[in-house]
Image 1 (cartoon, rainbow, N blue to C red):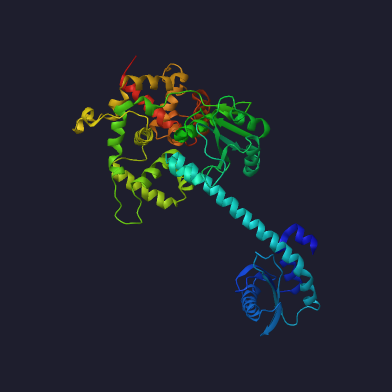
Image 2: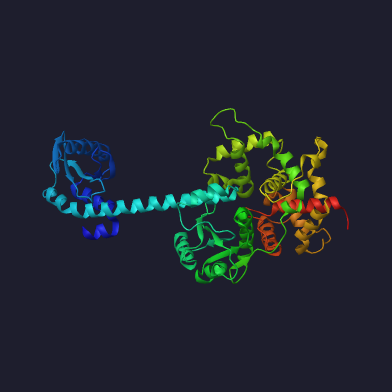
Length: 488
């Protein structure tokens, strides 16, 4: 009996008791709610639970420690178990056909103590898990607020948790290949001395997101490499140092660095320095983004339960970053996500399944999320709709052309146009809406072959391509800018 309590807890003890009684055994609340129930035979489950619930209510009403009664061909035996002061005492109930096995009442009295101890321990463990889940969801909420630029609310929510949010920060994405993610989180907390924010990624079940204080010369700056050296089956991507307001940018950088780190023996990589296109577009890009997103940001829901403009914008940003995984990120049903995306497409007059439109919207949202970007005054902007440039006009700006050339520079000069040319591979993949199947068919290679080529190009570009967040939007914009610039 005590061996069962140590190895299997209350559930195994109840299973053993139900076998000895050749009937139903369970634990119930005082109001008759079944907490755990085990039946020797499936057909006795309904009858046993019903009689046990009736007996538990009677026992509670009488204020008794034990109670028994007969009904038709069955007998029910009930015992009120001991419990700590802050834990409601459960009722042990056994229901079997008459006559009950000899000595069953004595057996139940002996089982009461280990069952009570198991139940108390399991109750404490359930409470601990609820507390851990609440803290995890709180940290996830703070991360979501940081990703959407709501710093003041993020600080308010983070005030109830520890540590305080650092600023400036560095973001690390840790991919736990073999070990339990909770165990790796504890290791990261120990290595950082409790100074880093550790969030279990709501999208990727094997990822941890670390928001690390970015202080020159501080030990936290080495946290990513330290984690990779201590945990032998993890991979770490590390962002540049950014302000707390740019946490979303730092996360994308760390995610891209993770794609590079997977192919390195040291299993960690820093994001390669690259200019942010949202900054390169300047004031003209800010005005273009405002005009493109205006129908979405001005949307007023027809009903109180319908999503407003901010919720739709957050949905769009999450979907562009995580694709179908946005359901996990936003904690919504896939049908809800699909309905919101249809509404967004209608409001903006764009096809959200086209990489071209996705790239434009991703850039517009990034520009909108860049508060330092200069915006022209009304006098400079003019009042006519013609004063707002189109996306192609933005991509023709000299600074954008220089940015585009830098994006594709690691690919080398364009080759002969054959399918093995990295430029051809990437352009074909983007022309086929970043879908491996159609791209592989157009390149006349297998799908695994196309995947291998893109995986190799992730290392060359130091960006993630196949997993979201993906560099596909920047690459589409870069190729478009170079095409508009013409030869040379």
